[in-house]
Length: 80
Figure 1: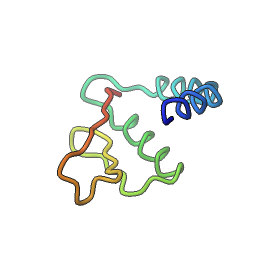
Figure 2 (figure 1 turned 135 degrees about the horizontal axis):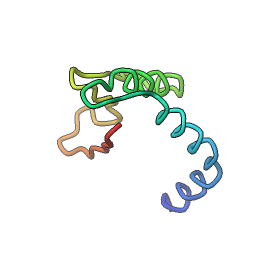
Figure 3 (figure 1 turned 90 degrees about the vertical axis):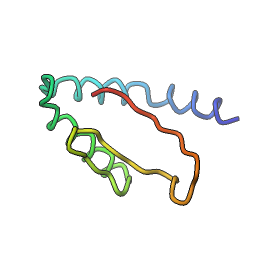
Figure 4 (figure 1 turned 135 degrees about the vertical axis):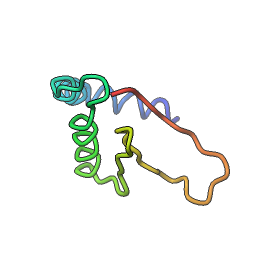
């Protein structure tokens, strides 16, 4: 059920995703200098309604989502 909904959402928002990835890729981010890209992602997530979005010392963007009080969580990650 969820995979069908996700597939439809992805297809309906394909151009939006492509545009966002192009904008993200255009931000200079040489190794060990990814601050601008991480901040772009943090601002985008906040604009989309996310809360508690953090950027750590290694420029990882962190968004705890429904993991409060859980003993097992799933982590999604990608290199910027």
